[in-house]
Length: 200
Image 1 (spheres, rainbow, N blue to C red):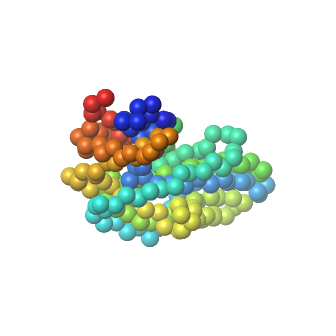
Image 2 (cartoon, one colour):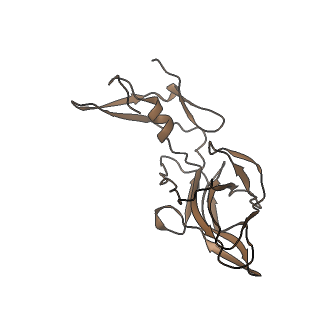
Image 3 (cartoon, rainbow, N blue to C red):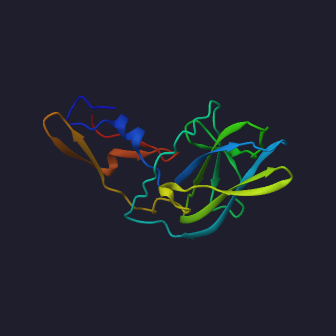
């Protein structure tokens, strides 16, 4: 969104483009190749390493691409800090809902996009993840691709008591300007989404 007033940031742009530090994910297409039903059963998290939340750093995650499926994606979220991470529903607003089992069944030739989100609430974590699939009487572990083309996912909860400086760059037909936004002018709701509360 564009701001008509060059002296003010477009808060619609902020709402659309903010990056959650504590969430990352991936999307894959699952295609049933065998004669019998293919079951997507879960996600295994491995090589998990957690530490105190990162400070003075922002983890920019690339957007999740669209797999091209005509059906709505099957969507789940996992808390990587849980002793036994269980799947939760992922809403259209990318909010974590109630626990929801992974019970996606595909017949031969069926294809479905599966979107997986991982999040943390207290620590910085790195990990790898596999999609667990049963097909033709066997169990398969398919590695989930992490952002940036690596095998490792990264999430970090915001550091306690730390305020990030906020800067907005506005470009006009004539020049560019930088607007500094005081931290008290932006609040975060219970879903960790930004809202501008400063003067208009």
